[in-house]
Amino acid sequence: MARIFCIANQKGGVGKTTTTVNLAAGLAKVGQRVLMVDLDPQGNATMGSGVDKRQLELSVYDVLLETATIAQARVTSEKCGYDVLGANRELAGAEVELVDVERREKRLKEALVRVADDYDFVLIDCPPSLSMLTLNGLCSAHGVIVPMQCEYFALEGLTDLVNTIKQVHANLNKDLAIIGLLRVMFDPRITLQQQVSEQLKSHFGEKVFNTVIPRNVRLAEAPSYGLPGVVFDPAAKGSQAFVEFAQEMVERLGKP
Image (cartoon, rainbow, N blue to C red; front, side, top):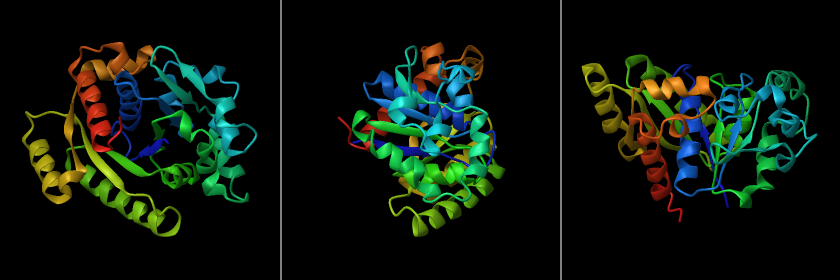
């Protein structure tokens, strides 16, 4: 039975998509069966997984409108070792089209139930805004992984996200909780980053993952080649950190 996680943060530019594709590739590398769901109309996670969003015959848009199943719409990224439920510009229209339909926030959840036995992990890349798309992700998930830069404004964004998760937990998804905070783009030479990191650990305790993702040029370069850093340059420090993170996730959740 798949464990389903949203990678979410209401602050933009914190490395959500980088985290999603590299964690997916890392989990695949340590022997897990993974589905990556792209819920962002920009389709960056799709392109970053070696899948051309312009060539998609079916996408997450079709799944949300119930004109296709996940089994029909998913594609396998041979290079990356995981399945992709891709997104493209069409998805932007889903916001409007879902406004009047029944069970609009549960569409993705119901679709995922049918493929739950095919995977160990489902990772959902959410857009930065709290939209109907993000809500579909949060309603489907067992938990939220929050990528965070260790800087002051990131703490403010975290407060907003925690409040959103509490609301969704209370009204729509009793399973939803923050699984953990992942420190990304970390530079230990910057005193402020160390201070914020310590603040996070003192406030959130075990919710802060042990693995820290360093600021890494190879991770930043990888999307231009249409690959996660873990696949593009496995020897890079950032790539190795994501494989460590994948192992920490598997251990934390007691997966075989």
